Structures are given as C-alpha cells and as structure tokens.
Length: 121
Image (cartoon, rainbow, N blue to C red; front, side):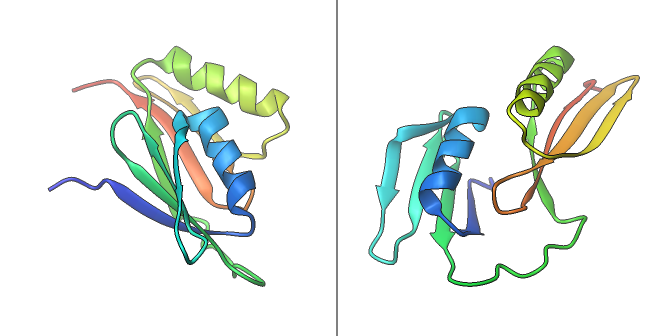
C-alpha cells in the first residue's frame, strides 16, 4: 500500500498551486479543476495534491500536524531553505545534526511542511 494523495483546505487554490509548483516540484500542466472547485496537481512521482477552497476560517492547525518531503542530499534541504527564506516564506523550525538535516515552513494557508534528509541506515 502506498500513500499517494493529500487533500488540503486552502483559501485560494491558484495561490496554493503556484506555491507547490514553485517550491515542491508539482507540475502545473497536470492541474485539473473539478466541479466543486478543487484543483488537483501531481508531481513526477505520481503524488496527487488536492487543493480545495474553503470559505471563511480554516480553523487552527495543531502545531504537530505536518507533512514532509524527503530530499536525497542534505545540500538540497539547505538550498531550498535558502530559497524559501529569500522569498519571505515563514520558516518555523530548523534542525541540523549528524545524520539529519531538516526545516519546517508554512504554506500560504499555514499548513506546516517539513523538508528533510536523513542518513540511510
């Protein structure tokens, strides 16, 4: 069994689509919009991200609730951290220790995203 789909409530599907395509390698040409307004985008690994516009407050998101993107090299984590920081994306956590490099940022709707590398083993 493989996890290959995540649905996120968002304020603006187009803004979120741009964010995930720009920083997390989702393909904007794969975008499909459904009758209910949900925008589905896919990455090269076949993972589907469903962005569904919600009216009003999205509610509070518990601090631990997050999803992550694994990188193959620690330099890729650091490079994306630098890029997001330069672009003003809010970084909420950083970790750099032997065998593990990670950070967490917030997407335009406050969803917590972890980007990490861990030494195989």
